[in-house]
Amino acid sequence: MKTIVIFFSFFIVVNTVFANNFIRDNQNNIVLDTTTNLMWQDDQSIQEIEKNWGEAIDYCENNVTLGGYDDWRLPNSFELNSIVDRTRISPVLNYTFKYPNISINNVFWSSSSKYNDDDHAWVIEFTRGTFSGYYIKDDGNYDYLGVNKNDDSHFIRCVRDAN
Image (tube, rainbow, N blue to C red; front, side, top):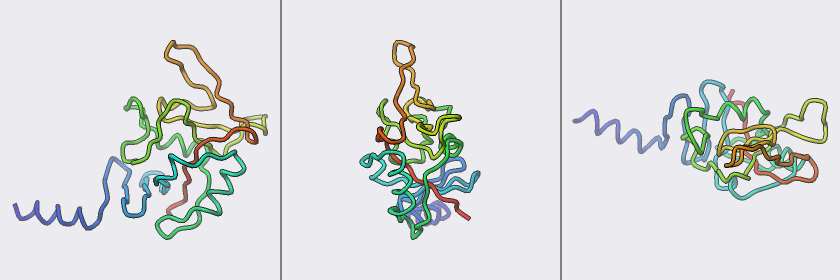
């Protein structure tokens, strides 16, 4: 019984949630992936701020300070895919994240341009975990979500290297 009380007290003081290789810091609104060694933004702005691609890059690099860090950036498509949990259904975002923002049309920018197409970038939506601007509608058909860098505004989840 004494061990449980000590552990419980430690949990409250540290204020983190552990899930697989993800650790959430509730006080700073960040999630650390110990496998990739990436630290993820996970605050209320995830659900509120939409920008075009260039503005999203600028936002992460010049406007985000979380956990005392100001070296945030827009993640590439591989990094965004690393926080998808394919064992889950809607949202497919790892459950450690407090702000999933999972409406079907809520897509998040990556810093990765599409191959041979500098006008478009990769995006992901965390309802089903689909990439590249496509998602599956309820009737099973594919529908295109525009990912034009200059015209489209999408949500942003910044990342930083934890080293």
